[in-house]
Image (cartoon, rainbow over all chains, first blue to last red; front, side, top):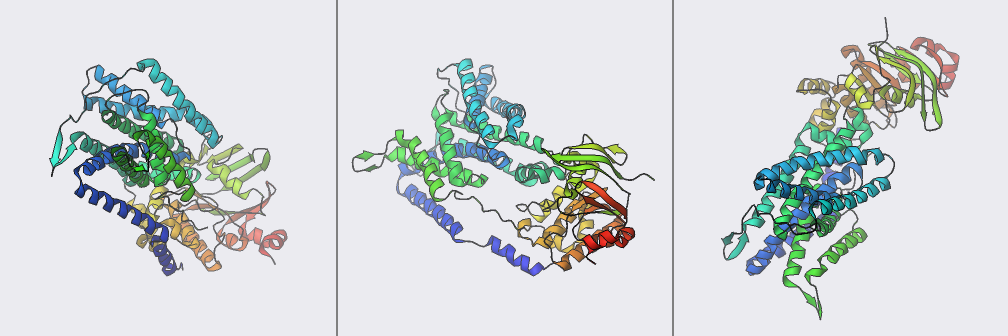
Length: 340
Length: 235
């Protein structure tokens, strides 16, 4: 019969901690200790950290949207940020028509899902089987198209939304924690948890994972692969919409360029986490958010060279470059376990 | 008696490469039928034509219904379970998730199906949380068979199940296939290099060469045929 003992051994070996995993765990542990000690030492540091986590959760949410689509189609959706921008404007428009913030929020997520699904069916599906480059070009085209549409409909003047969380703050041992940042973190994490649970525990989620992993094998067990990909685009658009809606209050106003730096940070987060890893995208987002906020807050300098907030975007690119050079699989990119 | 599966003048091609030149075959309900032939004869493509994973022309009827416009997910919904070359298991998913996917088209609880599958593959039950990629080759092939069986298929298409397996595992695999056939009435169409084992398990067989059926008959007839003995049985 089948040698059960051997495989069990191999199963264990697969789960054992190798040097790479240990390094990543040590790195994250070090970062956590650094932040904790910093927060205990200084209230300003603690405030920067919390703000960083909040904006980082936004980057993480958008990064997760990128990862969802990357896993399904092996393509980076360059239009993800602009799609989030469009849905944020839609939310603003809905509020102009009398909807409350949370009514508009819910309606916008539904619209985002429909929009993401429709885009996959109408413009991605026809070129999907041609080549990766074809899909990439379509997403770049979508970026420009959506950007133009937003500009055309809403113009480039600032739009204001009422913050859903007000301007008050909690006082925790002298540290002022804005309701806004707590709200952002809660909303993003609840959305991410719901999406995770959908993938992890439902039959639909299993079908989507199967369709992403091996489309041909998934079809053979009766999974409607094309529908799964469309739903995947819909869910990615929903996560993007959450990112856009949560980004807006932290930026104070809505402009057509709202999501462009955020898309770059999301790229950096996704690459840092390992493009295949949803958890990595989220942790990558938090790391990028905290790092950039601390740098902008303290503006550290080397000699007369001061790192100012203007350098945030180049720094994000530097992270992308560094990770791609040093550890292309990112912090959580998994080597595939496969035996033939 | 009409057959469960009938192929009539089926042609298939990959781009400009013509692989099947008018294949006709029939599989009776409750039987095991094997397809033999050298590499490149079109055995795999025949299965792929049935499950709709390759473009094909000609008539394919399953349970009296034309499969002409049915794709792979549609074929699965009609009760055709295709275990492709390389098994089609998801190495990144757990054993349980693989089995759950096997019954993807079934509604409601799949517990009865799982119980039945575990009665044939008891070790799968203990390993349901294990990642399928960490199973040995033989175990993965068993998992592929189990996964196909959870669908409660009307027809099971097996592509080279013995490929890369130790002889003792191949024998075990074919024992289970025969058991499923005898006890559960499972209809099987199996492509196999190991002609000896395949003909022992099957009631009938077809020999393919260069995209044509060159010989067909009951297993006994095929085993008695000089050409088959020389080419595929080696004596």
